[in-house]
Amino acid sequence: MSTLTMAAVAAPFDRDLEADFVRIERLVEKARTDGVGLLALPEAALGGYLADLNGGAEGPPPLALDGPEISRLAALARELVVVAGYCEIAPDGTKYNSAVCVTGDGVLGNHRKVHQPLAEDASYGAGDGFAAFDTPIGRIGTMICYDKAFPESARALALDGAEIVVCVSAWPGSRTNPSSDLSSDRWKRRFDLFDQARALENQVVWLSANQTGTFGSLRFVGSAKVVDPGGEVLSDTGVAGGMAVASLDVRQALENARRAMGHLRDRRPEAYPVLGGRPEFEHV
Image (cartoon, rainbow, N blue to C red; front, side):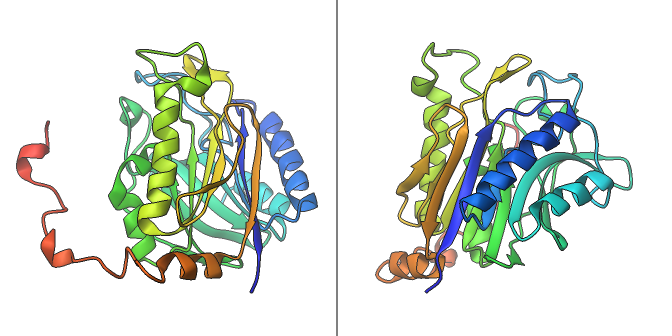
């Protein structure tokens, strides 16, 4: 049996890319000291998120997947597997809200956010799929923030063999009915429910990283966590900044969770062939 120590970060990041890298370096060094093998940083950790969700706000600096900033992140990671969010600029000039997975050897995987809330599509193109990939610590899948509101996202990764799913977020508190106590905010409750439900229904290990503090008009809920395949939260930062750290024998945890009732094994795809959606729902 092999135990893996994993960490999910709740921290603030903004447009000051150099300051972001200084913060990331500190977090990586703390993770290394704690024996962490997999570290999840928030959505938009390189350059910060959008200042609001109404469209038209200046976005973070666009970075190429093969550019010097991602190479710098990989150099900081060294033997760790690190996932971090950034604004990707594709060769054709399209910008994407992306999450890259690196080690010191380079890029292991890259995900472009598929589901775009409110007016995020005014700033980014949309990704077109979910795919797991192999890493030195096992097969993982990544997604970004609103992606986790859709069960198909995590299910696609689980069916592609992901043992660990890393969801990086810049998830804010409620905009229309905010709570003075962020820990009681209804959007924070949704954030936590999605984390536990996606882990449980797919029987995977789930890492959830998130921004903290405020940026523009947004106030982020933090709540980074590690969830086991039974949906139990092993470590949680709460709404404050910090690092949720937990150790688990991933393969054994998956085997235990799936032994009696295997949610992936016991699926009946022929009973729900309409999962692609029906036309009447397209514009509701």
